[in-house]
Image (cartoon, rainbow, N blue to C red; front, side, top):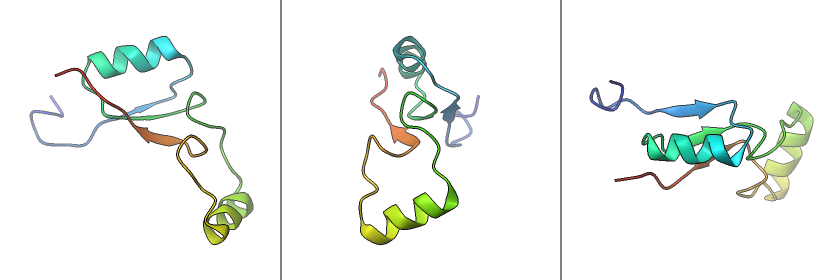
Length: 68
């Protein structure tokens, strides 16, 4: 429904590869959760942003390939 309305979809709380794969099959392009990285404190996030060291795999939101 959200896709039909042109809304962005985020799969939250993704903890396992099986959950990620299912969401990809369902066309969910963005995931967040323990699978993609542990939460950061405000201080740690600010430090990583300032240092330019916040990189994919170390953040909590990841865009993934989805099924056509």
